[in-house]
Image 1 (tube, rainbow, N blue to C red):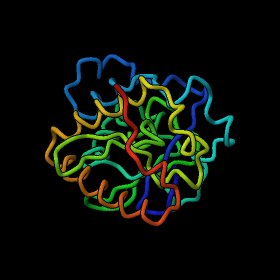
Image 2 (cartoon, helix red, strand yellow; image 1 turned 135 degrees about the vertical axis):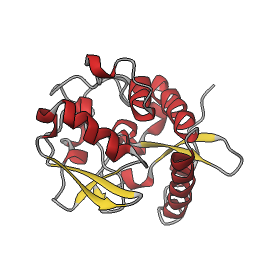
Image 3 (cartoon, rainbow, N blue to C red; image 1 turned 90 degrees about the vertical axis):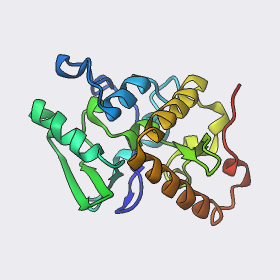
Length: 204
């Protein structure tokens, strides 16, 4: 999902490229973000091209809109683009400190899309009790049809989002970010009259 400056962006499922970071220099990488991408693999919210539901709405936006990156994620992608400069076509970064944005013109290669795109329309919320609960990102409600039918999302995808959340929470910077974003999401849900969607998605 694309939002101005602060919020997440996403990429609709398409046949443009494979979604895996599948090239030799990174096969054995211990990098946190590579491991997160490897966990998600080619899993997507539904077993179909979700872009057909909305015309790829989450891939559309202006030059000031983009995907909010996790702490350290910008450095990760800059290193990837140094290895594969052709993958950086149409991609720029903006922001400073912990508010870095990944900006693209809607033509990004799926293998190089950031975590906010891969997780969309869900978020691995981290609560004060230390548990990760997979929830709908309220910022998806405006643009994503799937945000209104979360119960129909692929269960394997939901479980993997939770695993990715646990992995990210093992890093102090990402853990603080997850806590901060969770508080922001809770505040946003209070402004959206969608009571059913506020509840965390639960699975066995």
